[in-house]
Image (tube, rainbow, N blue to C red):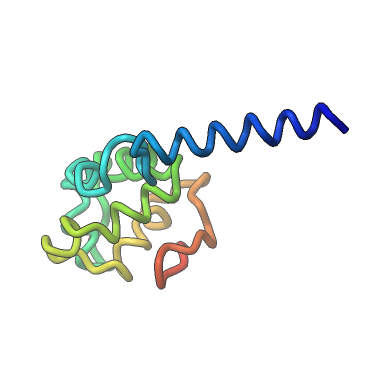
Length: 113
């Protein structure tokens, strides 16, 4: 019984340190900073009929490894101010045919298809 309690305590300390050092959904980078990586997706994020470019899909695949970060970027202030439509942006992983995309992940008021 003592060993599981020790692991819980260590996990709690690590969680606290993660919160205390300012890390968020995208680690030490802000969603607004990460949004700049998705510039190749601008057209695809505004029009569901636009085919995402290869460079867009590559960036979405990288960010999609952390679904919380991907969502934070799609809903970021930079994305909103640049005209990104969240209901369109969340369809990009599917339109890129990413097999390992986070299907069903709740992204704010939206669910990744």
